[in-house]
Length: 348
Ligand code: NAI
Image (cartoon, rainbow, N blue to C red; front, side, top):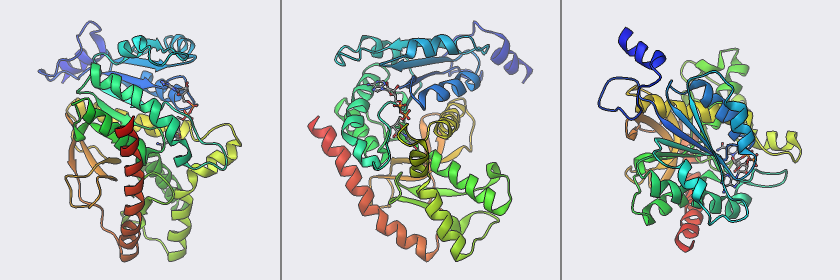
């Protein structure tokens, strides 16, 4: 163990991509959209927390050189690569193709956020186009990379990405994730506040999709905590509408960025730990569920991470009758969102 620690923390010249050994694995992680409201704090958290010797690649079409220079002064042993894309000529992918070389994990928060009065679906056309360009480059240069999509509407951008990866001939359903972790983080926080418990220790699942109509917090099976009918109803609404509460409070200046960066880092670092051989890491995530009997091809479900992405899709948490009914009602809505993503990718 001392040997492992030594390698991890004190031997800078140790080469990455050494999966054959037990030595903690140094990864290359891309943040695409790194100069944005989410991208900046997410990159900070990854610069702080990735395994020593790892590489953090930053890509954006604006301002990323400054963000990279700023982050480069932080005294962690995580190397930075900074790539500024061509905003005026998106077909020039020279810098993007450099950023996507040799990736273990790509985290994508690139795109336009909501303004008051907008739904996540209103963002689809612009954001799907952005995700398409990024995923095509990842498919070409790092076909085995794990891809975690934050860009909204997640219910549609993830199926669109799957179709783009299929077109490129490299789709592996175990390697593509929609990040809905902020919904769980919010549920933990609100439950912890209501019941006077440490939010970090609250065990709750939020399944379904990532929009108020499709998100389903499973409050009947939060371990060790029970709720009255009134509490269940108000908590559910609070969790589902939390994103809109931030959009309204920011009053035109965007949507959740800091809490999303926190949630995105938790998700990304969980995947990195699993790449490093750590087991038992489970997050709810919006993934390809066509191999399950859920009757829908994408859904946020409990997923266990492993060395190849998804190690296992766990059974859904225990639900009461009301939650089962809500799940049945939300699945057709998720299916519509999936179809939107697939149609875009097929015709794009
Ligand atoms: P932002 O506008 O502050 O940042 C987006 C960044 O993406 C900008 O720096 C922009 O230059 C960059 N970008 C645009 N086109 C690009 C391209 N082709 N390649 C690389 N970068 C590109 O937006 P913010 O607040 O960071 O939100 C980003 C996305 O995350 C939005 O779609 C938002 O709806 C979504 N989001 C998702 C959440 C979730 O729970 N999954 C929660 C909150 C936001």
